[in-house]
Length: 264
Image 1 (cartoon, rainbow, N blue to C red):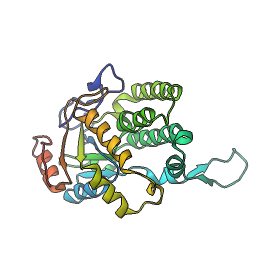
Image 2 (spheres, rainbow, N blue to C red):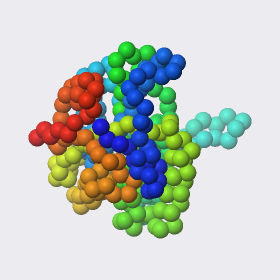
Image 3 (cartoon, one colour):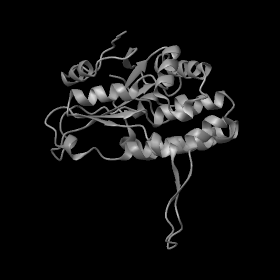
């Protein structure tokens, strides 16, 4: 099982929950929290469905893509005006990354943070087994993969990058235990395979994504999760080109942690 990245470069292990698998003081089950990380179109959603179907003790929290695709305005109090959709931020970012990357990364990170701050559902808290809440990506990969990649591509300028890092560090430190993860499942596939899958799923906003972009994201994941770059966890578990959700959940349920595995 991997140690999740800490909120700042000074302590990669600060995001790791170190408490044991037993119940909480109030008698409820302690829910393990992990994230699934990997390149665009690597198969996270498919793998997450396999995990959830393998055991009722696994709950998948999907990536909030729909929020990015439909930004809604909030009317002023007392105006009585309805909310209106004002833009597809995901599409705007892909079409003009120099203009919209910072705005997108700010909103995507905030939406991920809101998701991770939500309490586990009641059926996990009352579980007699080993309940696990699985997030599709996290506030950590938002920073150390996607925002960093945008900065290195000059789509986020140095001032924006400094501001992003400042508020990200502050918020993660403020919400510390509520955001902590116990592990990361790293799904790995070649950029070429991800490009094939991206074309098959046909998400309109991704029509202009090129192989070079996926190759850069692949290298960011390898550097973060394999080579111990800034903010990286100490170790990861995962597999290549997909894997078996039932195998992963049974390994964890047996108390041995997630082990390294590869399935072609």
